[in-house]
Structure formats: C-alpha cells, structure tokens
Length: 241
Image (cartoon, rainbow, N blue to C red; front, side, top):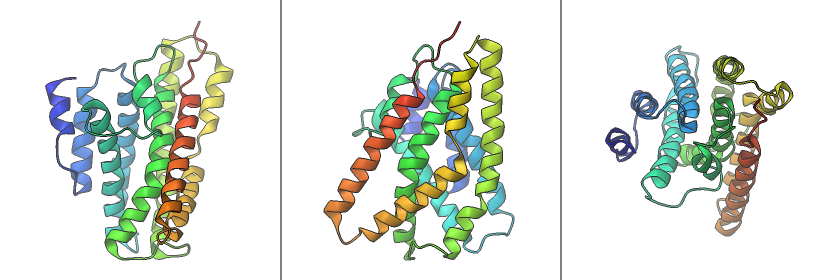
C-alpha cells in the first residue's frame, strides 16, 4: 500500500459531497490500473459527480436529505476500505469478495465494478437510508418527499453507470478474447434502478424493526451474507482465450 493511499484511508469521515468526490479521485489515482478496487471506485466517482450536478439543479424537494444520504453512503465504502486495508475492523461479508479478489487473474474490470455496486447498493444503501432518516429525524416511508427525490436520481444514475459499464466492456473486448456469452450474462445481471428499489424496501424493513434490535441484527446479517454470496458469483473468472 502506498503512503498516499494510507493517508486517504486514515482521514475522518467525509461531511460534504465535494469531500467525497475529492477522496474518490485520490483513491483512483493511488491504485494501480489492474486493481479491481480502481474499476469500482472510478465508476463510483462518475456516479457521485452526477449526483452533485443533479443536487444543484433545484429539482429536489428535500435537498439536504439527498446530499447527506450521499455522504453517509460514501463513508460506508471508505470504512470498508479502511477496515480491510488498514486492519481497522471487521470486513463485512458483502465487501469481502471484492476486497479479497481485487488482483485475481481472469476477472475483468467490469466484474470488479459490478461486484462493488452489488456490495454498495444491496448492503450499504439500506443502512445509509436508515441512518440518514434517523439522523435527520424523519420517517422512512413510501410516498414521502424523500422517496420521490431518491427516485428522481435513478434515471441519471442509470445513464452514467451504463456509460461507464459500456467503456469497461469495450476495454475488455479490446484487451482480451472474452467469451461473449459470459460477459453478456454479467452485464445483464445488473440493473441499477431495480437494485435501488430493492434497497429502499430493505431499508423500510430495517426501519420497521427498530424496536426489535435482535431481529434487526439478524436481518442485517442475513442480508450481508446474501450480498456476499452474489458478489462471489459476479467475480467468477471468465474463460479468456
């Protein structure tokens, strides 16, 4: 690990979207091109820049909610990196597949990017939604201004992520002789809007279990394990010729 990367990971949690973007840029710059974490972080950077641009458009009903959700969400990723690379704490099962396979041969950058999306959206996003609503003293419920704002950014995220994924597919076809059927299966596996809708439902479930901490913990643990299992499937080495 470089001294620059260690310095980034030792920073206190971010408090603004601009800090998140600056930190993601530094992480991308500090990682070698073949590192699987770099593929995901570059995708995440593009998405976060798009969220910042959208947050300045005046279209949101609860702008502080959107901005703080983005920060809380990003800090969960930074914590996963810190726990893994600095040994600062346990690594969640959702993040373990990517963090363990980041230099694995036969795994394409697109697979690493999708594995990161799997962990971050399916596991981290429900936790971030609950933490954001708890922190701001608002109810997490369907039909709320917060859910409408949450859904307003789905088309934008879909566009940005599809553009980046298309670039990664192009890179894979240029740099490797890839079994297209396998690659098509991986690309088809991920629909960001569908994943985000599922994350909202998971968050509503966690919200409903606030008075039942044991069940809430069991639910979170089960979710973590299932997301980790999906991540290992995404990172299965492809047949490269």
